[in-house]
Length: 396
Image (cartoon, rainbow, N blue to C red; front, side, top):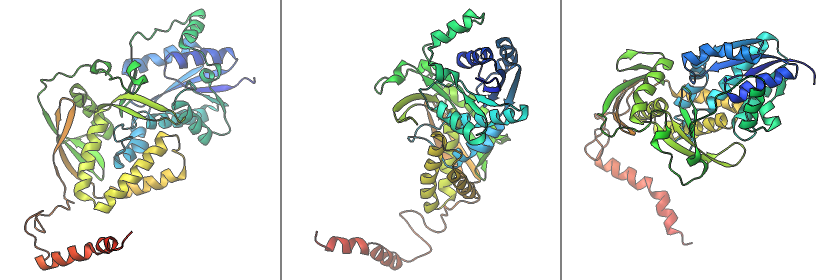
């Protein structure tokens, strides 16, 4: 194997720590890159350079990508009201593509000859990283030590301990993967389709049943969240605030059952208060300001966009076409939505917009109207049903 300068997507956990030491022992110079998409504390980020250096990395880069994550990925998921399986807000999918993109950018800056990640051969992330790396940097070699060696976590820990690196064993019963758009939760209950994931498994733990309702107002401008309770905030800051407000209520918790990229069924718990609150509010505002046909096609094309992103097809040209459609659809999505948080639920209380298509001066549903007569309505109803009338006259 020729010796190369390798840029490694680095989380600081067991798998990527193993990768640094293993690749260094193979003779490679390793630069580590930690891309912060909302899953790290300030303390963890501060410790990352020292940890990477002790493992043998020649350099470390920390990238704050939270703004990029929203602008290039999350705003399209929000515009499409994307919930996979009508439940899961794709907490991880967008982050992985964003992280891979930034790792490639750093690799170009430092003149690396290879890219590496620490994904195993079992899940979706390996595909997302592989596809992104090969699409963006087909000239760079791809190294995947964890997948290639197929080591157990115990073997990885033993390998590192023999070299003086003692990684803390995971003492919890659940694996937690935090990010700006939500947190994934895995444990023994997610390994089958019948078991219930207990409330204690989620980061905020058991939700008190006596929490008082909390009402808040989210403002959107052309589909972008711009203010909370009258206070202007950046999308990143607003998402952080909604996560902090919604998590104690258990809003945005759930378990998603669906198909993995590799074709098997998978199940994962998620805790995504900001994503669920924003999608709930955004969808309600769209109901007020968009036409019925816009809403119909947005639901279909938004789900298609979410599928492309989730399944590792983000760089297919179709994704750019769909982003254009979604962005165009947001021109009139400006207004405010009033939400109330209850234990384990968020309820839409009201919505208003200068672009509202709900006009009581035109007609009140089920009552009077001002744009047509009763005779005109009767004629419309008769013509409207002609095709069905004719269809039923034909004997099968």
